[in-house]
Length: 355
Image (cartoon, rainbow, N blue to C red; front, side, top):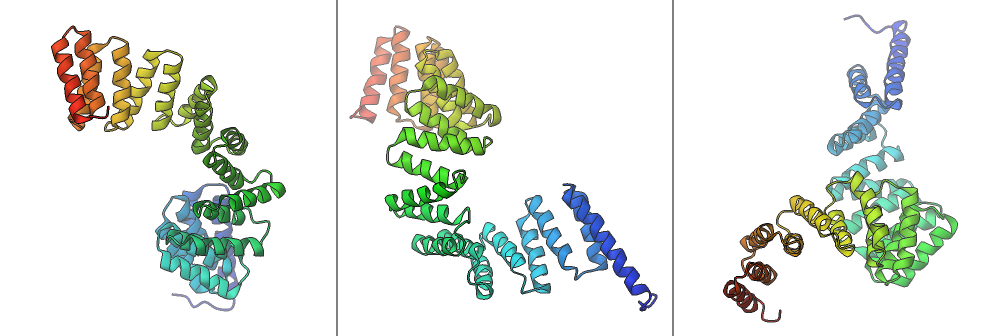
């Protein structure tokens, strides 16, 4: 093997730098798989290349491999223990993996070097929240907000803890404070919407969710919240439109199909209601309530064989389900079998005397 002389050393370093630039260009263009292979090849030549370990961490994260990402950031941190950004990335991966002791050690290590680092306070807050200590996590998020008043996450996270601690007025005031200076703070809008819903202000909650949805129209959770609040306020036509948009992007949304079934029922379209309850039941075959709703619509449509099959399916799961026994009684009555109907109704009364 040729010796690395003073003449060829700069050439080798330049070659490594060019190789890194080429891999980094792939990374910045979104060709993550190709970039990862290039970085791995470079790491063989230069195993202590700090930035290569970092890029490999982000590549691993892109393919949702948090253990690999944490390992890469850990290697980078070993090369430069004073680099705060790398320590934060490593601790964040540990947090996502539920390795709370390691995550907490990472965030505390950052705070030892930079006591005012808001992201380390936020990370530590999430660690203590995962441990169930809401007062401690609240303290961390408030500390982050003090050190970085413009941070988009600190105050909304503190407000989440206040909500969980049932300090609702304080939470609402904090959300309002955030939105006063950052009207498009998504987390604060969601938090305020949750607060308004919790205290029964459905119209105000709907308005906040709609504002949040305009910021992130792809959010399935917020799409459903908007539709649900329209439904709860009796705006069934609008709710049905919102649910249609939701299901076009999330066709297996269980509650979306259920609400569509009720919307269809409110406009007296039992056929459509049956279809939506059947779809929901296919997603969760053991959900008793959905099976009962679907069977009830089939009964109303006079489709007795299908209705009876639906009620029997419920009884196969829960033999003493009074509503299913009552449904069977109505099926028997529709068929003219009064004795059979009476038997089912008496069985239902035995299973549920308060019915």
